[in-house]
Image (cartoon, rainbow, N blue to C red; front, side):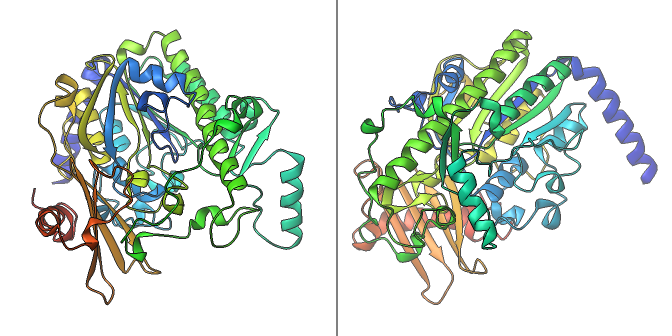
Length: 478
């Protein structure tokens, strides 16, 4: 048996080498905590010319959804093409390799077919130990990671906290008069340019993971100055949705770790406005770094031979429902940008088809002409590249755990008109949420609380049951 496996491996290697020159490169751009807060998504206030230009030369997915709205589970799900129930990763403390090392990751699959696979910045949450066989070289990280502050004010705060043996956290934002490379994303862009020059002979799978707009919102001053502070508005729905169960909400705990943020309760308007301003500036800062990388791709003459895919690992609350950060099943947390450009993609197209991040793995395989591993749970969206309006998925699915030991799970399904979430576990049986996106796109009224939408609830509950709930490995029956 071992001999046959060795022969098969040799044959696969020979096949890979013989086809390597035909395969497109892949530039795989991940952006941390990026909601669709971009000009190309209709947010005209935003200064995001480089991501907008990428969308103009490819396809923008208007309704793409992550499978769990927090970094590690979302990234593992995307990179394995499997739902969180299958990966067994629901929190920030469980590396993929510790629970499902058998799942062949996207970079590992491309590597097995002759691609040079490189990881820069934040791709997996846990870094190199997450997927050690996925990369041709050890993953690279910038010397200045995302927790770095450089202003005297913040450095003084950090020093005071150190003296009190407190974690070295400062304000949740910063606008310093520094060059782009003073912060991590400028360094990541510079490293990506260096790698493009080294790898231009291809085929390569270059994964570039940017830190912003993750907290803290630290960006050079010139990106803050792109926005008029007086024109920035707060969310117009800073309240719990009417009739929503308590379990749907959270305390925005990630933000509470920063200096100047109260341990509980609402965020005062002055701080909230600074947070929104900081988020906008961080988006523009990372947009500029992405522009540098894309400019180098063009300078090297690689545009026509490279698939460029850009995604945010999940959305982000900016005070809507009184929430900040992610960690929910609401639209603001699960909806994130997805843009693809390159060979076979018609420029300046968009689709409203419901798309899931687990669809990225099979799609890139099909675009590269690679076979699909048997464990994949998503669907290739390549047919949408050919016909953006064709009939497509009926639903996109997300989930989020609650409780110290994840004893409760909220399963959420987004259909064309509705978002339905069912919270299971605990002593109360289940609690439901239903939001009508035609009448209530900001999800301010939970229709499940009025008892008048039983048919719609039952239909959506059946979708959840078929796809996620009844299947312990997350594969469902559809």
